Length: 82
Image (tube, rainbow, N blue to C red; front, side):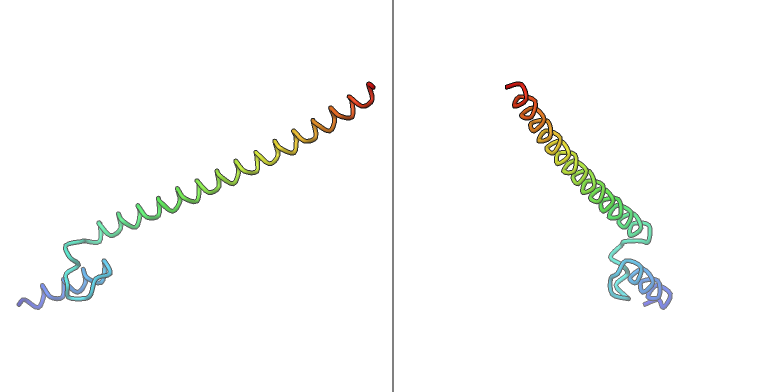
């Protein structure tokens, strides 16, 4: 076995998280970086989705409070007319 080839396998193995000497299972640094970018993008999408859901809940809560105020105002006006 070539010493240089074994050393390369160790370096590649460490880069993708596999055991040193495995050669990384054919995955290079670029593929690992692409996967990390995809995971980062997915996490960001999940965070944005969570923020949108939270904003939607807050909006619905405000609308509910506003509707409640309107009902109270309506009842007050109706009571004054009688």
